Length: 463
Image (cartoon, rainbow, N blue to C red; front, side, top):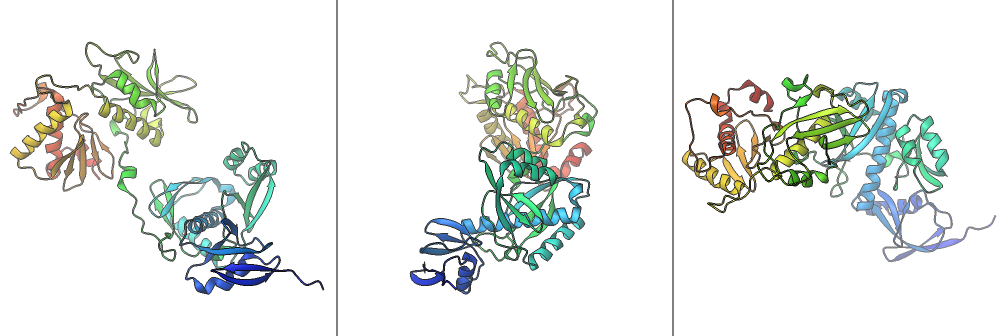
């Protein structure tokens, strides 16, 4: 029998001999006792190698664990693959229309699931149990290279049309796919050699999907704390019950804006100015067109009086028919209203007061600071363009330009100002006679004492 060629492998400055063709996994096993964390990859003189690869030259190796960025990325990728396999096993491949990782969120990955199943904690508990079953069985994760055309056909057969569509645009003639007990998927990056390397994970319902909780690079043996930042969800705009059956939203009606500044603010958000229909944003996939209407010329400055926003409408891109607010997907509605809020906030009609040389916001900030002192209100602070209110039912922000109110961690709060002819006996005389200033200060004082709010519509919005 021909004796295998011996190769020199240097690890941490020491030389070792291994036969040609030895898997890196076998070499890593000899050094596993030197690390409390599983070795997931090897670094061969600057090149990362998966553990199923074999030794084919003299080299210097460095062991890579989840305490290093490539290692934790490999762990996360392998955990996602394991979760996908388990989800399809539990829900049934024929029932899953789409399962997609959307983004990372506080030591976790946010995932959307769509199909003929009920996404609840019971389903996630069964998926997690299946993941642990597969992890204990140390099922191999196998990698192979196939032609791109074959990969497209493979994913079509496996009821993964989105993945097939993605690969149909790939320029390279071949693609690497991974398989796990008959389940095949495409990943760009490295994988662990089998499922036993994925031990620490958890599944939890969150918002309209769920999260796959994972360990952190700092402590690969423990689940990271799941504390999503409130900033991620603070710009949520919910539909008003009274507008669901209507074809136009009056949420920002009455706000005066500067046309050219509005166009500039929204250009980066894919809004375009149309001579006939005003500002438009088109959602081609959903076939929805959002339009902002105002008595404005979007192509030239307003030299007489700042125009006023009238309403926002949504129409069918193909038929042109108006859609009811209830027919608009929540995400699209929230995104459009966020954009309108941006325009109202940064392009509101407020220049410089010639008598005081103060901008509108600076004037309102000064008036608010003085008024808050007079009212002995101590739970409000003025920062930048906002009044930050620490109420007892929640935290709020009021924009000093637009008057828009947000509950931090919740959504925009719809508060309708009472017109002057309907107000009661209370009148607040300000140095600034702009009615918007009175509205903004009233909102600040209202939410500073949120426990005294009696309006059921406002209370229903506060969570």
